[in-house]
Length: 141
Image (cartoon, rainbow, N blue to C red; front, top):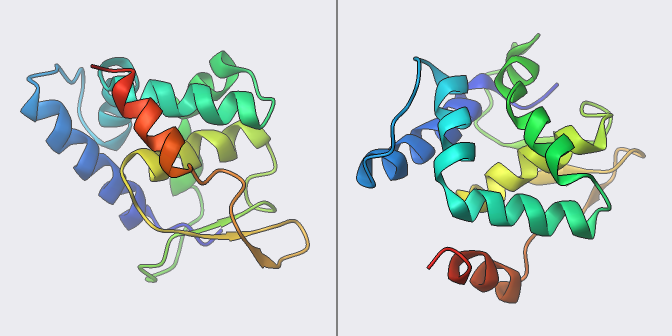
């Protein structure tokens, strides 16, 4: 896998900053605790998950369940020092896991490169359009 733990920690760092700004509680310690709190308290993340789940024909609840164990999946077997965020379909064979990961990357505006199952760099099918980003943000107001 080419998604370094440092990048998972970057997602958690950005999520934690937003959670602390709105005084949302974080139960527990560590990256996964922050991701779980973001799922519970960041309505934009929930909206992004719903948008991407519908677009990709994935179950919303299944994607949320994947997010609850995502840090373990991301941290298993990583031995890279690269700062690049790369999402490879071959590394994340379960579509709901890819959807959960890309929902986090889209929510926290973290750039990434997406490789399809043929190992070709392609436009990510999880990128939000400007209209979708606006809809996700407006739905929380």
